[in-house]
Image 1 (cartoon, rainbow over the protein chains, first blue to last red):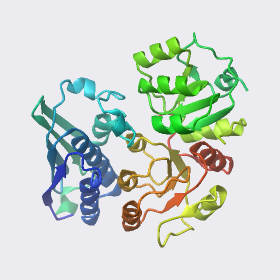
Image 2: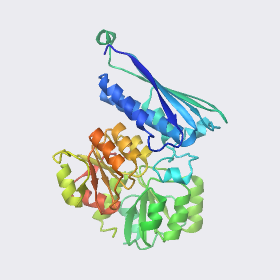
Image 3: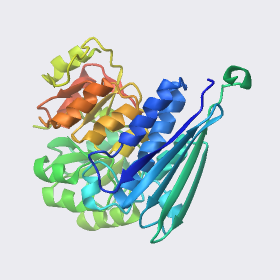
Image 4: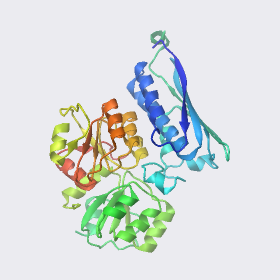
Length: 149
Length: 113
Length: 118
């Protein structure tokens, strides 16, 4: 792979019609760049969970992505309530989602654990009342410097 | 078929040993949506779900569900177990995914009409 | 098992366009919680669900799920069907409950996408 790419998607809180479409588009971009399917899937799943979190909890947010021959990096910055206890939020099954979110198939407390599971590096910075910035990195292992030229 | 038969046949782990495990199971329901269970599950059914939220106990109690089986090794929260014990709703867990567990329940003769 | 056989077993209706009924389906997974679907590596399988919103199709897309069966006669809206068409994800609708759907497919030899332990 010789190319690099970056860009940004804007997310609107509670816009459930478009929720997930940024991640779906990101998946398309990764596919088009010829990134291995397994890495595309991990990136898409992690991005999707992060995107859903922003849509569910925040007023607005943006998803930036940067794809290089070495890694896929996705940063989700939202204007939301913030996460008071990140360790607790990382626990499988822990959720603060209201019932209507559960009825939509989300808020089962698997989102952050899913992101962690699918990524090589995850950092979360959150300020209660201001918002959360979540960044993950997935390394494109198997792509040697020679082939990435 | 009694709940205890299912527990034995499918190696379910009982999380609420103090509840009544001798109830007759009349059918099965699988869903993670509380509203769906409220609308469609029938009394005496065993409910298969990945949902572990406390509210499952109230829904099960409301509908006369004979027991809840949590799949994929889902661990019920402590409050959920306490409430289930208090309301006499058996909670069991299985390492199987819902599809597989339901397949086995179906093979044992349970239906959902 | 092919998608066509699955349609037959479930008496299901295919609601997407240009659906390849010879598509092979080896595994199945049933859930209403999309994070659950994403957590248990259910790649290349059939998703059985009672939810019909567009996120189900997007979840299927990101998780590389082969096809979706909606149970209890629930039909997604036209935009959701269009999204599935654009992602080439076949959608089927059956009047059976999720329990019956899983039971009958299992009886006919389809097995679970997620193993004993995730």
